[in-house]
Length: 154
Length: 154
Image (spheres, rainbow over the protein chains, first blue to last red):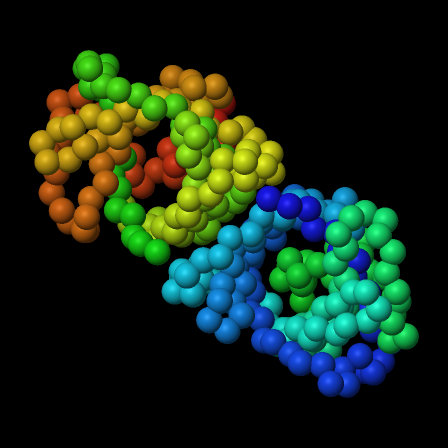
């Protein structure tokens, strides 16, 4: 068990992408309830089951367990649709490594950047390509993007 | 990953209980959706996270992972209420060991007996104390008993 402390932003332009290496992530939800999300994630031949509690600003309780890839494939079949398909880029800036997620499929066109902090109130440098802070906007959570994908936003 | 094949019955009288040893189980649900239940179970100092798919008669897909007790306590705090509190008795009869669950709390008064089979169509002997078959009645599933506890049935 742990606490995830994460700030989420839109991006202003594509300058973050120069030289960044991406990893394809497939993830889907057994529960998209904001009080108790249950996520199955596959990255290459690794997979995890992750439970998160309700977000309190940038903080959420988080429980993560590695699971066999074959289990993950069986669990994905039980999950809500659509699945989230995205490429995650790791972009170092200042003292932090930003995770920039470029979404595909029904969320194509959406790009968000996240920074994970070790404690509440920890400061971080804002890269020049950073856009609006959407940490507190539940539409941008991945489970929110299952409930209402970006392509269906007004 | 596996497939759980289970038949569930009411009990006719208390004769099953003679000499049976019980274990207290506390379990609760992160998802009570019948298509994808997510259960946290604690028995003594052991705990598990279990995902089950939709029941197809007596069969359901099942994925189970042992988790640390401290995690289970944190996860229980995220779960739907009420939690399920029951004593499970193991009652050998013929070639099978029946699990008889005596519910407490908001499900007080309910007792169900389950037999787990290795394959569909496997035969089993019916003990004399066995009552009605409720395998296909979703009210008697544990997640159903969270959605509507026995004490609130008409």
